[in-house]
Length: 321
Image (cartoon, rainbow, N blue to C red; front, side, top):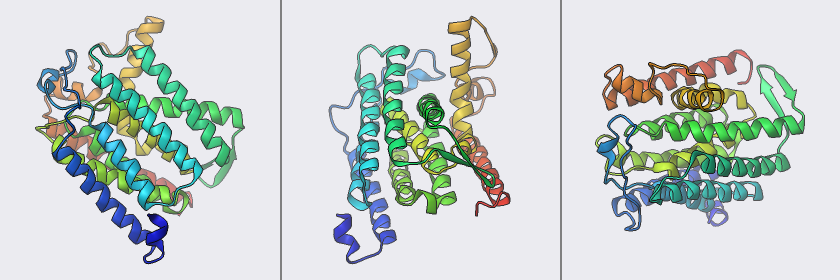
């Protein structure tokens, strides 16, 4: 499709068509959802988790499918990107099967799947990209084995913190929209067609937010949040500035990461921290600070935008623009 259209119009115009196509396909598929999609069973330990009971869950299957289809049709595709699409679908599928399971999968099972897919993604990345990272004015070469290990950690962490942030109507999708747009705006030349892919993913998420903003009628589930986390990590590495992920996904990292650290220390080292702080942090804001769901989404997004502005200032001052 891309090659046919490229004979008539520019690549930017094709990308715009891809964005519109992605939004329309996603909206229609969510407006008339597949009958086999599972229903949420409610989450006993989440704040207001019972309110989600009975809602359509696992629509990350639709979001990821619409994204992959749109990018394959309207963007130039090479072998590296095709492999990422396969792994992205696999990550989504693991989350979807968990969403649809009568008994939720164990943390160890999901963690092992995340690790395997992270290793495969890094193997693909190393085959097509260098292992230098940009820090201020300097390109710092990283030994391949070290970069490989750090990349696996980045992908695994990104998958899980993004997954943990999906607990308030509209929160995960809204934060990911900010992060994806930030990468697209800050690194258009370096990312190339991946920058357009980011905007296509944003279009998919905006269509989803038509149904997920409070009060939501459907949830992306692990199928969506895990796929988003995987994609964000890949984009961070493709940008050549993987450390900037700490700023451009700061709210996702803090919101979901605190809970991961808390559980890890308690489960493996028997160290209890932040006993009076609910995790994920959005639950603490709702229960402890009495923020409404709308306030959580709005304020978390404002904070993330400020982090994106800070990233822009740092890149500007360090001569990256």
